[in-house]
Amino acid sequence: MELPADAPAVITADALRADLGCFPTREQYHDLVAAFKADGFEVCADLCAVDYLEHAERAVPEGVTPTRFEVVVNLLSMSRRERVRIRVQAGDVEPEVDSLFDLYPGSEAMEREAFDLLGVIFRGHPDLTRILMPEDWEGHPLRKDYGTGRVPVQFKEAPGPR
Amino acid sequence: MSEPTVRTAERLEALTAETSEGPQELQRREATPASELGREVGSVVRIGDAPFNPDDVDYERADDETMIINMGPSHPSTHGVLRIMLELDGEIVLRAKPVIGYLHTGMEKTGEMLSYVQGATNVTRMDYLSPVINELSYSMAVEALLGIEVPERAVWIRMMMSELNRISSHLVWMATNGMDLGSTSMMIYGFRERELILAFFEKTAGLRLNLNYVRPGGVAADLPDGWEDDVEVICDTIYERTFEYDELLTGQPIFRQRMVGVAPISAEEALALGVTGPLLRSTGVPWDLRRTMPYLAYDQVDFDVIVGTYGDNFDRYAIRLNEIRESVRIIRQCLERMPAGDYRSQDPKVTPPPRARIGESMEALIHHFKLFTEGFHVPAGEVYSAVESPRGEHGCYIVSDGGPKPYRMHVRAPSFVNLQAIPLLMRGASMADAITVISTVDPIMGEVDR
Image 1 (cartoon, rainbow over the protein chains, first blue to last red):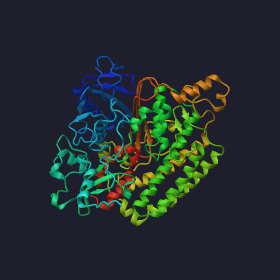
Image 2 (cartoon, rainbow over the protein chains, first blue to last red):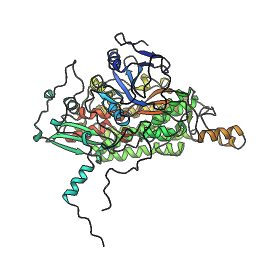
Image 3 (cartoon, rainbow over the protein chains, first blue to last red):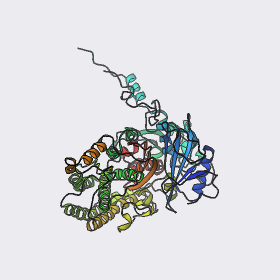
Image 4 (cartoon, rainbow over the protein chains, first blue to last red):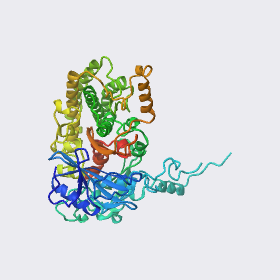
Protein backbone atom coordinates (compact mmCIF):
# COMPACT_ATOMS: atom_id res chain seq x y z
CA MET A 1 0.00 0.00 0.00
CA GLU A 2 1.17 3.47 -0.83
CA LEU A 3 0.59 6.80 0.82
CA PRO A 4 -1.78 9.11 -1.05
CA ALA A 5 0.01 11.39 -3.48
CA ASP A 6 -0.86 14.65 -1.74
CA ALA A 7 -0.05 13.42 1.73
CA PRO A 8 2.53 15.32 3.77
CA ALA A 9 5.87 13.56 4.22
CA VAL A 10 5.25 11.33 7.21
CA ILE A 11 7.15 8.49 8.77
CA THR A 12 5.56 5.13 8.20
CA ALA A 13 6.25 1.74 9.65
CA ASP A 14 5.36 -1.68 8.37
CA ALA A 15 5.85 -3.29 11.72
CA LEU A 16 2.18 -2.76 12.42
CA ARG A 17 0.87 -6.13 11.35
CA ALA A 18 -0.42 -5.79 7.83
CA ASP A 19 -1.67 -2.28 8.44
CA LEU A 20 0.33 0.64 7.27
CA GLY A 21 1.15 2.69 10.30
CA CYS A 22 1.72 6.40 9.81
CA PHE A 23 3.37 8.69 12.30
CA PRO A 24 2.51 12.25 11.35
CA THR A 25 3.47 15.21 13.48
CA ARG A 26 0.67 17.18 15.06
CA GLU A 27 0.88 19.73 12.27
CA GLN A 28 0.71 17.06 9.54
CA TYR A 29 -2.02 15.05 11.21
CA HIS A 30 -5.09 16.79 9.83
CA ASP A 31 -3.62 17.12 6.32
CA LEU A 32 -2.68 13.45 6.28
CA VAL A 33 -6.16 12.32 7.28
CA ALA A 34 -7.63 14.65 4.67
CA ALA A 35 -5.34 13.10 2.05
CA PHE A 36 -6.42 9.62 3.04
CA LYS A 37 -10.05 10.66 2.91
CA ALA A 38 -9.59 12.03 -0.58
CA ASP A 39 -7.85 8.77 -1.46
CA GLY A 40 -10.89 6.64 -0.71
CA PHE A 41 -10.91 6.06 3.04
CA GLU A 42 -14.56 6.86 3.59
CA VAL A 43 -14.97 5.84 7.21
CA CYS A 44 -13.22 6.77 10.40
CA ALA A 45 -13.66 3.40 12.05
CA ASP A 46 -12.08 4.13 15.37
CA LEU A 47 -10.33 6.85 17.27
CA CYS A 48 -8.80 6.48 20.69
CA ALA A 49 -5.93 7.77 22.75
CA VAL A 50 -3.24 5.94 24.69
CA ASP A 51 -1.31 7.17 27.70
CA TYR A 52 2.28 5.88 27.46
CA LEU A 53 3.34 7.21 30.85
CA GLU A 54 5.18 4.00 31.76
CA HIS A 55 6.74 3.54 28.34
CA ALA A 56 8.38 6.80 27.43
CA GLU A 57 11.14 4.87 25.60
CA ARG A 58 8.93 2.65 23.51
CA ALA A 59 9.77 1.43 20.03
CA VAL A 60 8.79 3.95 17.38
CA PRO A 61 10.27 4.41 13.92
CA GLU A 62 13.35 6.55 13.67
CA GLY A 63 12.62 10.24 13.50
CA VAL A 64 9.55 10.12 15.71
CA THR A 65 9.80 11.67 19.14
CA PRO A 66 7.54 9.63 21.39
CA THR A 67 5.36 11.66 23.71
CA ARG A 68 3.28 10.56 26.63
CA PHE A 69 -0.04 10.72 24.82
CA GLU A 70 -0.77 9.23 21.47
CA VAL A 71 -3.95 9.50 19.44
CA VAL A 72 -4.63 6.44 17.32
CA VAL A 73 -7.00 6.65 14.37
CA ASN A 74 -8.13 3.64 12.34
CA LEU A 75 -9.46 4.56 8.93
CA LEU A 76 -11.32 2.16 6.73
CA SER A 77 -11.65 2.18 2.97
CA MET A 78 -14.72 0.28 1.88
CA SER A 79 -13.98 0.57 -1.81
CA ARG A 80 -10.45 -0.84 -1.42
CA ARG A 81 -11.13 -3.02 1.61
CA GLU A 82 -8.15 -1.69 3.45
CA ARG A 83 -7.47 -0.24 6.82
CA VAL A 84 -4.86 2.26 7.81
CA ARG A 85 -3.71 3.30 11.22
CA ILE A 86 -2.48 6.76 12.06
CA ARG A 87 -0.63 7.36 15.31
CA VAL A 88 -0.01 10.95 16.18
CA GLN A 89 2.13 11.96 19.13
CA ALA A 90 -0.18 14.35 20.95
CA GLY A 91 2.10 15.85 23.56
CA ASP A 92 3.34 15.27 27.08
CA VAL A 93 1.54 17.63 29.40
CA GLU A 94 -1.46 19.08 27.66
CA PRO A 95 -2.12 16.79 24.70
CA GLU A 96 -3.78 18.62 21.87
CA VAL A 97 -4.48 17.70 18.26
CA ASP A 98 -6.80 18.94 15.53
CA SER A 99 -10.30 17.58 15.49
CA LEU A 100 -11.34 15.38 12.58
CA PHE A 101 -14.94 16.54 12.90
CA ASP A 102 -14.84 18.53 9.66
CA LEU A 103 -13.64 15.45 7.75
CA TYR A 104 -15.51 12.69 9.53
CA PRO A 105 -18.52 13.92 11.51
CA GLY A 106 -18.65 10.43 13.02
CA SER A 107 -15.47 11.05 14.96
CA GLU A 108 -17.38 13.44 17.20
CA ALA A 109 -18.36 11.02 19.94
CA MET A 110 -15.04 9.19 19.82
CA GLU A 111 -13.09 12.42 20.28
CA ARG A 112 -15.32 13.37 23.15
CA GLU A 113 -14.61 10.02 24.71
CA ALA A 114 -10.84 10.48 24.30
CA PHE A 115 -11.16 13.91 25.87
CA ASP A 116 -13.26 12.61 28.72
CA LEU A 117 -11.18 9.59 29.61
CA LEU A 118 -7.68 10.80 28.73
CA GLY A 119 -7.89 14.57 28.58
CA VAL A 120 -6.80 15.03 24.98
CA ILE A 121 -7.94 18.39 23.59
CA PHE A 122 -9.30 18.34 20.05
CA ARG A 123 -9.04 21.75 18.41
CA GLY A 124 -12.14 22.65 16.42
CA HIS A 125 -14.43 20.09 18.02
CA PRO A 126 -17.96 21.53 18.21
CA ASP A 127 -18.85 20.27 21.66
CA LEU A 128 -15.87 19.07 23.63
CA THR A 129 -17.55 18.06 26.87
CA ARG A 130 -17.41 14.96 28.97
CA ILE A 131 -19.45 12.13 27.55
CA LEU A 132 -19.18 9.10 29.83
CA MET A 133 -18.16 10.55 33.16
CA PRO A 134 -20.35 12.90 35.21
CA GLU A 135 -19.87 16.56 34.45
CA ASP A 136 -18.24 17.42 37.77
CA TRP A 137 -15.78 14.54 37.72
CA GLU A 138 -12.18 15.45 38.43
CA GLY A 139 -9.39 13.94 36.38
CA HIS A 140 -9.31 11.64 33.40
CA PRO A 141 -9.73 8.02 34.46
CA LEU A 142 -7.81 6.23 31.72
CA ARG A 143 -4.64 8.15 32.44
CA LYS A 144 -2.02 5.93 33.98
CA ASP A 145 -1.41 8.25 36.91
CA TYR A 146 -5.07 8.24 37.85
CA GLY A 147 -5.37 6.33 41.09
CA THR A 148 -7.92 3.56 41.06
CA GLY A 149 -9.92 2.59 44.09
CA ARG A 150 -8.90 5.80 45.76
CA VAL A 151 -12.17 7.69 45.60
CA PRO A 152 -15.13 6.13 47.34
CA VAL A 153 -17.73 5.49 44.70
CA GLN A 154 -21.01 7.19 45.42
CA PHE A 155 -23.64 9.08 43.59
CA LYS A 156 -22.56 12.64 43.39
CA GLU A 157 -23.63 14.81 46.28
CA ALA A 158 -25.70 12.00 47.63
CA PRO A 159 -28.13 13.53 50.08
CA GLY A 160 -27.43 12.67 53.66
CA PRO A 161 -29.80 10.66 55.81
CA ARG A 162 -33.24 12.14 55.71
CA MET B 1 -39.39 9.84 67.67
CA SER B 2 -37.59 11.99 65.14
CA GLU B 3 -39.42 14.53 63.04
CA PRO B 4 -40.11 13.34 59.50
CA THR B 5 -38.30 15.50 56.97
CA VAL B 6 -40.66 17.63 54.97
CA ARG B 7 -39.69 17.87 51.30
CA THR B 8 -40.23 21.35 50.03
CA ALA B 9 -39.96 22.95 46.64
CA GLU B 10 -36.46 24.06 47.53
CA ARG B 11 -35.47 20.49 48.06
CA LEU B 12 -36.79 19.55 44.63
CA GLU B 13 -34.66 22.21 43.03
CA ALA B 14 -31.64 20.85 44.83
CA LEU B 15 -32.43 17.41 43.48
CA THR B 16 -32.56 18.74 39.94
CA ALA B 17 -29.21 20.43 40.41
CA GLU B 18 -27.68 17.19 41.60
CA THR B 19 -28.69 15.31 38.49
CA SER B 20 -27.67 18.02 36.06
CA GLU B 21 -25.13 17.04 33.45
CA GLY B 22 -24.35 20.65 32.65
CA PRO B 23 -23.03 21.26 29.14
CA GLN B 24 -23.51 17.59 28.22
CA GLU B 25 -27.20 18.34 28.00
CA LEU B 26 -29.14 19.95 25.22
CA GLN B 27 -28.88 23.73 25.66
CA ARG B 28 -31.09 26.56 24.53
CA ARG B 29 -30.39 27.61 20.97
CA GLU B 30 -28.73 30.87 21.84
CA ALA B 31 -26.32 29.05 24.13
CA THR B 32 -25.27 26.55 21.44
CA PRO B 33 -22.45 27.26 18.98
CA ALA B 34 -23.37 27.01 15.31
CA SER B 35 -21.41 23.85 14.54
CA GLU B 36 -22.90 22.04 17.52
CA LEU B 37 -26.37 23.24 16.60
CA GLY B 38 -25.81 21.83 13.15
CA ARG B 39 -25.03 18.44 14.61
CA GLU B 40 -28.04 18.47 16.88
CA VAL B 41 -30.43 19.21 14.08
CA GLY B 42 -28.89 16.37 12.14
CA SER B 43 -26.82 18.18 9.56
CA VAL B 44 -24.10 15.74 8.63
CA VAL B 45 -23.01 16.03 5.04
CA ARG B 46 -21.90 19.46 3.99
CA ILE B 47 -21.47 20.29 0.36
CA GLY B 48 -18.04 21.65 -0.39
CA ASP B 49 -16.32 23.68 2.25
CA ALA B 50 -19.23 25.99 3.00
CA PRO B 51 -19.52 26.47 6.75
CA PHE B 52 -22.74 25.39 8.35
CA ASN B 53 -25.31 28.15 8.55
CA PRO B 54 -28.01 27.56 11.17
CA ASP B 55 -30.42 29.70 9.18
CA ASP B 56 -30.46 27.00 6.51
CA VAL B 57 -32.15 24.59 8.84
CA ASP B 58 -35.72 24.08 7.78
CA TYR B 59 -37.14 23.89 11.28
CA GLU B 60 -36.56 27.35 12.65
CA ARG B 61 -38.58 28.46 15.60
CA ALA B 62 -38.18 31.09 18.24
CA ASP B 63 -37.17 29.56 21.52
CA ASP B 64 -40.37 30.49 23.32
CA GLU B 65 -42.38 28.40 20.88
CA THR B 66 -40.44 25.24 21.50
CA MET B 67 -39.88 23.04 24.46
CA ILE B 68 -36.90 21.00 25.55
CA ILE B 69 -37.95 17.76 27.11
CA ASN B 70 -36.02 14.96 28.60
CA MET B 71 -36.54 11.32 27.72
CA GLY B 72 -34.87 8.83 29.94
CA PRO B 73 -32.44 7.74 31.32
CA SER B 74 -35.16 5.55 32.73
CA HIS B 75 -37.73 5.15 30.00
CA PRO B 76 -39.30 1.93 28.76
CA SER B 77 -38.38 2.54 25.14
CA THR B 78 -34.76 3.52 25.66
CA HIS B 79 -33.57 -0.06 26.13
CA GLY B 80 -31.57 0.61 29.23
CA VAL B 81 -30.31 3.93 30.42
CA LEU B 82 -30.18 6.05 27.30
CA ARG B 83 -31.20 9.62 27.91
CA ILE B 84 -32.28 11.70 24.96
CA MET B 85 -33.05 15.38 25.18
CA LEU B 86 -35.44 16.61 22.55
CA GLU B 87 -36.42 20.05 21.43
CA LEU B 88 -40.02 19.80 20.37
CA ASP B 89 -42.36 22.01 18.46
CA GLY B 90 -45.63 20.48 19.43
CA GLU B 91 -45.23 16.88 18.33
CA ILE B 92 -42.31 17.43 15.97
CA VAL B 93 -38.70 16.89 16.98
CA LEU B 94 -36.49 19.81 16.02
CA ARG B 95 -33.28 18.83 17.75
CA ALA B 96 -32.12 15.81 19.64
CA LYS B 97 -29.09 14.98 21.68
CA PRO B 98 -28.28 11.69 23.35
CA VAL B 99 -26.77 12.09 26.81
CA ILE B 100 -24.96 8.92 27.76
CA GLY B 101 -22.70 7.60 30.46
CA TYR B 102 -25.26 6.34 32.96
CA LEU B 103 -23.96 2.81 32.66
CA HIS B 104 -20.28 3.70 32.54
CA THR B 105 -18.38 1.28 34.73
CA GLY B 106 -14.87 1.83 33.41
CA MET B 107 -14.55 -1.47 31.62
CA GLU B 108 -11.61 -0.30 29.51
CA LYS B 109 -9.79 0.60 32.71
CA THR B 110 -10.77 -2.74 34.22
CA GLY B 111 -9.35 -4.40 31.13
CA GLU B 112 -5.95 -2.97 31.98
CA MET B 113 -6.12 -4.55 35.44
CA LEU B 114 -7.03 -8.06 34.28
CA SER B 115 -4.70 -10.54 32.68
CA TYR B 116 -5.31 -11.74 29.13
CA VAL B 117 -6.81 -14.94 30.54
CA GLN B 118 -9.32 -12.99 32.64
CA GLY B 119 -9.97 -10.37 29.99
CA ALA B 120 -12.66 -12.34 28.20
CA THR B 121 -14.88 -12.23 31.29
CA ASN B 122 -14.66 -8.46 31.16
CA VAL B 123 -15.38 -7.84 27.49
CA THR B 124 -18.24 -10.31 27.41
CA ARG B 125 -20.24 -7.95 29.61
CA MET B 126 -20.03 -5.03 27.21
CA ASP B 127 -22.61 -5.84 24.59
CA TYR B 128 -24.67 -8.09 26.78
CA LEU B 129 -26.79 -9.35 23.91
CA SER B 130 -23.88 -10.64 21.87
CA PRO B 131 -21.28 -11.90 24.35
CA VAL B 132 -19.68 -14.36 21.92
CA ILE B 133 -18.87 -11.60 19.47
CA ASN B 134 -17.26 -9.39 22.10
CA GLU B 135 -15.09 -12.28 23.20
CA LEU B 136 -14.29 -13.11 19.61
CA SER B 137 -12.89 -9.72 18.68
CA TYR B 138 -10.92 -9.61 21.92
CA SER B 139 -9.55 -13.13 21.48
CA MET B 140 -8.65 -12.49 17.85
CA ALA B 141 -6.69 -9.42 18.88
CA VAL B 142 -4.79 -11.34 21.54
CA GLU B 143 -4.12 -14.21 19.15
CA ALA B 144 -2.81 -11.81 16.52
CA LEU B 145 -0.35 -10.39 19.04
CA LEU B 146 0.66 -13.87 20.20
CA GLY B 147 0.91 -15.09 16.63
CA ILE B 148 -0.83 -18.38 17.34
CA GLU B 149 -3.09 -20.36 15.08
CA VAL B 150 -6.42 -21.61 16.30
CA PRO B 151 -7.37 -25.21 15.42
CA GLU B 152 -9.84 -25.71 12.62
CA ARG B 153 -12.57 -27.05 14.87
CA ALA B 154 -12.30 -24.08 17.21
CA VAL B 155 -12.72 -21.75 14.24
CA TRP B 156 -15.91 -23.48 13.16
CA ILE B 157 -17.26 -23.69 16.70
CA ARG B 158 -16.62 -19.96 17.05
CA MET B 159 -18.39 -19.28 13.81
CA MET B 160 -21.40 -21.36 14.76
CA MET B 161 -21.66 -19.78 18.19
CA SER B 162 -21.34 -16.29 16.69
CA GLU B 163 -24.20 -16.96 14.35
CA LEU B 164 -26.36 -18.44 17.09
CA ASN B 165 -25.58 -15.33 19.05
CA ARG B 166 -26.48 -13.11 16.12
CA ILE B 167 -29.84 -14.83 15.90
CA SER B 168 -30.51 -14.44 19.61
CA SER B 169 -29.52 -10.78 19.47
CA HIS B 170 -31.73 -10.08 16.48
CA LEU B 171 -34.57 -11.95 18.18
CA VAL B 172 -34.32 -9.67 21.18
CA TRP B 173 -34.33 -6.76 18.78
CA MET B 174 -37.46 -8.08 17.08
CA ALA B 175 -39.04 -8.55 20.49
CA THR B 176 -38.24 -5.12 21.88
CA ASN B 177 -39.05 -3.43 18.62
CA GLY B 178 -42.41 -5.15 18.68
CA MET B 179 -42.90 -3.98 22.23
CA ASP B 180 -42.06 -0.38 21.31
CA LEU B 181 -44.63 -0.47 18.54
CA GLY B 182 -47.28 -2.00 20.73
CA SER B 183 -47.05 -5.52 19.35
CA THR B 184 -46.66 -7.31 22.65
CA SER B 185 -47.16 -10.72 21.10
CA MET B 186 -43.97 -10.21 19.11
CA MET B 187 -42.19 -9.50 22.35
CA ILE B 188 -43.28 -12.79 23.82
CA TYR B 189 -42.43 -14.76 20.67
CA GLY B 190 -39.00 -13.17 20.34
CA PHE B 191 -38.00 -13.99 23.87
CA ARG B 192 -39.50 -17.48 23.57
CA GLU B 193 -37.33 -18.37 20.59
CA ARG B 194 -34.26 -16.80 22.12
CA GLU B 195 -34.70 -19.12 25.06
CA LEU B 196 -33.90 -22.08 22.76
CA ILE B 197 -30.53 -20.57 21.98
CA LEU B 198 -29.80 -19.58 25.55
CA ALA B 199 -30.56 -23.11 26.67
CA PHE B 200 -28.03 -24.39 24.15
CA PHE B 201 -25.48 -21.85 25.38
CA GLU B 202 -26.04 -23.06 28.91
CA LYS B 203 -25.50 -26.64 27.81
CA THR B 204 -22.30 -25.73 26.00
CA ALA B 205 -20.66 -23.06 28.11
CA GLY B 206 -22.45 -23.45 31.42
CA LEU B 207 -23.83 -19.93 31.31
CA ARG B 208 -26.74 -18.35 29.51
CA LEU B 209 -25.63 -14.78 29.02
CA ASN B 210 -22.07 -13.73 29.75
CA LEU B 211 -20.57 -16.88 28.38
CA ASN B 212 -16.79 -16.39 28.59
CA TYR B 213 -16.77 -19.18 26.03
CA VAL B 214 -14.44 -17.85 23.34
CA ARG B 215 -11.03 -17.35 24.88
CA PRO B 216 -7.60 -16.59 23.51
CA GLY B 217 -6.42 -19.86 22.01
CA GLY B 218 -9.78 -21.41 21.20
CA VAL B 219 -12.99 -21.99 23.04
CA ALA B 220 -13.57 -22.97 26.67
CA ALA B 221 -15.14 -26.37 26.08
CA ASP B 222 -16.01 -28.73 23.29
CA LEU B 223 -19.57 -28.89 22.07
CA PRO B 224 -21.71 -31.17 24.24
CA ASP B 225 -22.74 -34.66 23.17
CA GLY B 226 -25.70 -34.57 20.86
CA TRP B 227 -25.19 -30.92 19.95
CA GLU B 228 -26.12 -31.67 16.35
CA ASP B 229 -29.68 -32.50 17.36
CA ASP B 230 -30.04 -29.39 19.48
CA VAL B 231 -28.71 -27.11 16.78
CA GLU B 232 -30.89 -28.73 14.18
CA VAL B 233 -33.97 -28.17 16.31
CA ILE B 234 -32.95 -24.54 16.80
CA CYS B 235 -32.42 -24.02 13.07
CA ASP B 236 -35.68 -25.66 12.05
CA THR B 237 -37.77 -23.93 14.69
CA ILE B 238 -36.40 -20.47 14.18
CA TYR B 239 -36.41 -20.65 10.41
CA GLU B 240 -40.05 -21.66 10.46
CA ARG B 241 -40.92 -19.00 13.01
CA THR B 242 -39.38 -16.19 10.95
CA PHE B 243 -42.26 -16.72 8.53
CA GLU B 244 -44.67 -16.37 11.43
CA TYR B 245 -43.05 -13.03 12.26
CA ASP B 246 -43.52 -12.11 8.64
CA GLU B 247 -47.22 -12.75 8.94
CA LEU B 248 -47.44 -11.01 12.27
CA LEU B 249 -45.54 -7.85 11.35
CA THR B 250 -44.35 -7.42 7.78
CA GLY B 251 -47.69 -7.03 6.14
CA GLN B 252 -49.51 -5.58 9.08
CA PRO B 253 -50.87 -2.11 8.19
CA ILE B 254 -50.24 -0.42 11.55
CA PHE B 255 -46.71 -1.77 11.70
CA ARG B 256 -46.03 -0.67 8.13
CA GLN B 257 -47.33 2.81 8.72
CA ARG B 258 -44.93 3.28 11.58
CA MET B 259 -41.97 1.79 9.75
CA VAL B 260 -42.16 2.40 6.01
CA GLY B 261 -40.52 5.64 5.00
CA VAL B 262 -39.95 6.74 8.58
CA ALA B 263 -36.54 8.15 9.54
CA PRO B 264 -34.56 7.54 6.37
CA ILE B 265 -30.79 7.92 6.22
CA SER B 266 -28.73 8.16 3.05
CA ALA B 267 -25.58 6.21 2.30
CA GLU B 268 -23.44 9.37 2.32
CA GLU B 269 -24.74 10.37 5.72
CA ALA B 270 -24.24 6.90 7.11
CA LEU B 271 -20.65 6.75 5.90
CA ALA B 272 -19.87 10.23 7.19
CA LEU B 273 -21.16 9.26 10.62
CA GLY B 274 -19.24 6.00 10.55
CA VAL B 275 -22.29 3.91 11.30
CA THR B 276 -22.05 0.22 10.47
CA GLY B 277 -24.15 -2.89 10.62
CA PRO B 278 -27.83 -3.07 9.61
CA LEU B 279 -28.04 0.72 9.82
CA LEU B 280 -25.47 1.09 7.05
CA ARG B 281 -26.69 -1.86 4.99
CA SER B 282 -30.21 -0.44 5.02
CA THR B 283 -28.93 2.39 2.83
CA GLY B 284 -27.78 -0.08 0.20
CA VAL B 285 -24.08 -0.26 1.05
CA PRO B 286 -23.21 -3.96 0.99
CA TRP B 287 -20.68 -3.76 3.79
CA ASP B 288 -20.56 -6.79 6.03
CA LEU B 289 -17.18 -7.68 7.50
CA ARG B 290 -18.05 -11.36 7.26
CA ARG B 291 -18.04 -10.99 3.51
CA THR B 292 -15.85 -8.00 2.78
CA MET B 293 -12.99 -8.68 5.19
CA PRO B 294 -13.56 -12.32 6.10
CA TYR B 295 -12.39 -13.65 9.41
CA LEU B 296 -12.81 -17.15 10.89
CA ALA B 297 -14.06 -19.34 8.02
CA TYR B 298 -16.70 -17.01 6.63
CA ASP B 299 -15.04 -17.16 3.22
CA GLN B 300 -15.87 -20.88 3.08
CA VAL B 301 -19.60 -20.69 3.73
CA ASP B 302 -22.44 -19.55 1.56
CA PHE B 303 -24.59 -16.68 2.70
CA ASP B 304 -26.06 -13.50 1.34
CA VAL B 305 -25.41 -9.99 2.60
CA ILE B 306 -28.80 -8.39 3.04
CA VAL B 307 -29.04 -4.79 1.90
CA GLY B 308 -31.89 -2.31 1.86
CA THR B 309 -32.74 0.50 -0.50
CA TYR B 310 -34.32 3.40 1.33
CA GLY B 311 -32.51 3.35 4.65
CA ASP B 312 -35.76 3.71 6.56
CA ASN B 313 -37.05 1.91 9.62
CA PHE B 314 -38.66 -0.80 7.55
CA ASP B 315 -35.42 -1.63 5.74
CA ARG B 316 -33.65 -1.98 9.03
CA TYR B 317 -36.37 -4.32 10.23
CA ALA B 318 -36.31 -6.37 7.05
CA ILE B 319 -32.53 -6.66 7.15
CA ARG B 320 -32.55 -8.01 10.67
CA LEU B 321 -35.33 -10.45 9.94
CA ASN B 322 -33.53 -11.77 6.88
CA GLU B 323 -30.21 -11.91 8.64
CA ILE B 324 -31.77 -14.39 11.01
CA ARG B 325 -32.49 -16.60 8.00
CA GLU B 326 -28.98 -16.15 6.63
CA SER B 327 -27.50 -17.03 10.01
CA VAL B 328 -29.58 -20.20 10.03
CA ARG B 329 -28.08 -20.98 6.64
CA ILE B 330 -24.55 -20.54 7.98
CA ILE B 331 -25.28 -22.65 11.05
CA ARG B 332 -26.60 -25.46 8.87
CA GLN B 333 -23.34 -25.44 6.94
CA CYS B 334 -21.38 -25.48 10.20
CA LEU B 335 -23.46 -28.45 11.25
CA GLU B 336 -22.57 -30.34 8.09
CA ARG B 337 -18.94 -29.41 7.90
CA MET B 338 -17.84 -29.24 11.54
CA PRO B 339 -14.30 -30.63 11.48
CA ALA B 340 -12.97 -32.99 14.11
CA GLY B 341 -9.97 -32.14 16.23
CA ASP B 342 -8.99 -29.90 19.08
CA TYR B 343 -11.29 -27.21 20.30
CA ARG B 344 -8.42 -25.09 21.55
CA SER B 345 -4.78 -24.53 20.80
CA GLN B 346 -2.49 -27.07 22.42
CA ASP B 347 0.09 -24.44 23.30
CA PRO B 348 0.47 -25.00 27.05
CA LYS B 349 1.56 -21.40 27.55
CA VAL B 350 -1.81 -20.14 26.41
CA THR B 351 -4.46 -22.72 27.21
CA PRO B 352 -4.69 -24.71 30.44
CA PRO B 353 -3.74 -28.41 30.42
CA PRO B 354 -6.52 -31.01 30.67
CA ARG B 355 -7.59 -31.62 34.23
CA ALA B 356 -6.38 -35.23 34.19
CA ARG B 357 -2.83 -34.19 33.27
CA ILE B 358 -2.43 -31.95 36.30
CA GLY B 359 -2.31 -34.85 38.72
CA GLU B 360 0.41 -36.73 36.85
CA SER B 361 2.60 -34.16 35.13
CA MET B 362 4.77 -31.60 36.87
CA GLU B 363 4.88 -29.38 33.78
CA ALA B 364 1.14 -29.42 33.45
CA LEU B 365 0.79 -28.36 37.08
CA ILE B 366 3.28 -25.52 36.60
CA HIS B 367 1.58 -24.36 33.41
CA HIS B 368 -1.79 -24.46 35.09
CA PHE B 369 -0.53 -22.51 38.07
CA LYS B 370 1.27 -19.91 35.98
CA LEU B 371 -1.68 -19.46 33.69
CA PHE B 372 -4.17 -18.76 36.43
CA THR B 373 -1.93 -16.68 38.66
CA GLU B 374 0.23 -14.56 36.42
CA GLY B 375 -1.27 -15.31 33.02
CA PHE B 376 0.72 -15.54 29.80
CA HIS B 377 2.96 -12.82 28.45
CA VAL B 378 2.07 -11.28 25.13
CA PRO B 379 4.75 -9.81 22.87
CA ALA B 380 4.83 -6.03 22.75
CA GLY B 381 2.88 -4.50 19.92
CA GLU B 382 -0.53 -3.24 19.04
CA VAL B 383 -3.34 -4.63 17.01
CA TYR B 384 -6.84 -3.70 15.90
CA SER B 385 -9.18 -6.57 15.17
CA ALA B 386 -12.69 -6.11 13.91
CA VAL B 387 -15.61 -8.48 13.58
CA GLU B 388 -19.19 -8.01 12.47
CA SER B 389 -21.44 -7.84 15.49
CA PRO B 390 -25.24 -7.78 15.14
CA ARG B 391 -24.92 -4.01 15.46
CA GLY B 392 -21.94 -3.34 13.22
CA GLU B 393 -18.20 -3.32 13.34
CA HIS B 394 -17.02 -4.44 16.74
CA GLY B 395 -13.35 -3.60 17.04
CA CYS B 396 -10.80 -4.26 19.71
CA TYR B 397 -7.58 -2.28 19.88
CA ILE B 398 -5.00 -3.73 22.23
CA VAL B 399 -1.62 -2.27 23.09
CA SER B 400 0.69 -4.75 24.75
CA ASP B 401 3.92 -3.85 26.52
CA GLY B 402 5.08 -7.46 26.78
CA GLY B 403 3.46 -8.09 30.14
CA PRO B 404 0.62 -10.38 31.18
CA LYS B 405 -1.98 -7.60 31.09
CA PRO B 406 -2.97 -5.36 28.20
CA TYR B 407 -1.36 -1.95 28.50
CA ARG B 408 -4.40 -0.40 26.86
CA MET B 409 -7.55 -2.07 25.68
CA HIS B 410 -9.98 -0.02 23.66
CA VAL B 411 -13.21 -1.36 22.28
CA ARG B 412 -14.79 0.19 19.25
CA ALA B 413 -18.40 -0.34 20.19
CA PRO B 414 -20.75 -0.22 17.20
CA SER B 415 -23.66 1.13 19.23
CA PHE B 416 -21.55 4.00 20.52
CA VAL B 417 -20.89 5.19 16.99
CA ASN B 418 -24.35 4.35 15.66
CA LEU B 419 -25.91 6.47 18.37
CA GLN B 420 -24.63 9.55 16.57
CA ALA B 421 -27.18 8.93 13.85
CA ILE B 422 -30.03 9.56 16.27
CA PRO B 423 -30.23 13.38 15.88
CA LEU B 424 -30.23 12.96 12.12
CA LEU B 425 -32.89 10.26 12.11
CA MET B 426 -35.14 12.04 14.57
CA ARG B 427 -35.11 15.43 12.93
CA GLY B 428 -38.54 16.38 11.71
CA ALA B 429 -40.06 13.14 12.95
CA SER B 430 -42.90 13.06 15.39
CA MET B 431 -42.43 12.08 18.98
CA ALA B 432 -43.93 8.65 18.35
CA ASP B 433 -41.47 8.06 15.51
CA ALA B 434 -38.61 9.01 17.79
CA ILE B 435 -39.40 5.83 19.72
CA THR B 436 -39.10 3.72 16.59
CA VAL B 437 -35.82 5.44 15.75
CA ILE B 438 -34.26 4.45 19.06
CA SER B 439 -35.57 0.98 18.51
CA THR B 440 -34.23 0.49 14.99
CA VAL B 441 -30.83 2.00 15.77
CA ASP B 442 -30.67 -0.72 18.42
CA PRO B 443 -28.20 0.75 20.91
CA ILE B 444 -27.02 -1.54 23.68
CA MET B 445 -26.14 0.74 26.52
CA GLY B 446 -23.74 -1.73 28.09
CA GLU B 447 -21.43 -1.30 25.14
CA VAL B 448 -22.16 2.38 24.54
CA ASP B 449 -21.03 3.32 28.03
CA ARG B 450 -18.62 0.43 28.63
